[in-house]
Length: 435
Image (cartoon, rainbow, N blue to C red; front, top):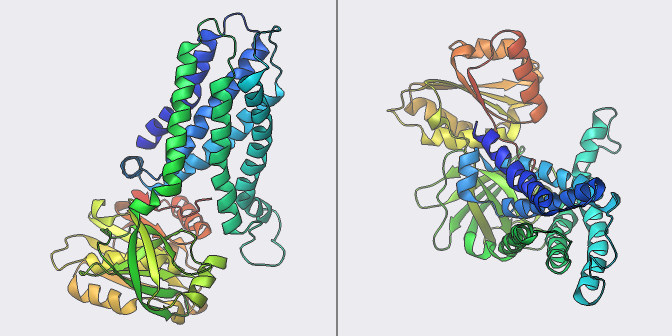
């Protein structure tokens, strides 16, 4: 329900309000011109909202139900901007001679907008390039293997940053190009407010991290067969890590300065953090190869609402591969007083891939209501809904499901459970695909 209200607010302030103000102040403008102006005002407003989302606002993240869901809105809002900007540019606008100033700053603002439009078009398409291999893989294997990324993350990130500069250029256009409304002060004030809001948010995303991040010292780097396990202690004040939360981290070493989100797989009483990072891409492979003890680790967080403590009395935790990381922090948090009945199913390909089994054993000894099983696909076969029901000591229909792992695994298991009439009463997961 909160997600619905949030999307409604985005639609209201990003599309409905600017469109209404264009209609209110447009006077006798023809239909095509009104549509073009409304599309431009909506695209501009949605860009400002997207720049706000890029600041990762903590209150909004908690209200909407997680940073991952906020970024889903960010993605679809960006796609909407693309089509609205094309509509604004391609649909003709018919003004009488002298209605729009063509000299001085107004003329320059028109020229700036022409250039900014094509930059916006290119940058939005580039931002969407991350999606292309996934769409192609629905119909054919991706050539060459790997993750199929068409664009290195570092280059994608810099092009994404450039969208803020494009917004500033469009703000210049908005400020100095006066479209002929009979009563345009309200529309102008609204769009100028959006311009100021978006610019402030953009500047915060570029420099605010200096205030948010905390400095840690890497104390251990363990190359496990399934992941690179990093231990770090705060240099001064650390972050407050919740069980199951994730943080955005980077390191003070060449090739590792790009911020990436990773689940906190462990937190100690002295403020130390553990991250278990699987080498699935260029950045995570560089972490394994380059990060060293003594390096500085920058941590921004924590984020996420993946928290078993808000769930029902019976819970099934399902981890796929390195998706065990939030459940390790969950297990560390369990005490002898825990009243919930919890079953963890940890799916791996081979026994060597299992991470943190000693911590799970300790939690099972400490907490009577917690138990776990390691499902090895090389010996036990593929994990199915039937096997999942066999592992659980309670009917799945009466339990809440917490899942972390590959999305295809989640979709397959949930589909099977629904077909079996054994769907859990509630399902919790987070989407870590932020681009």
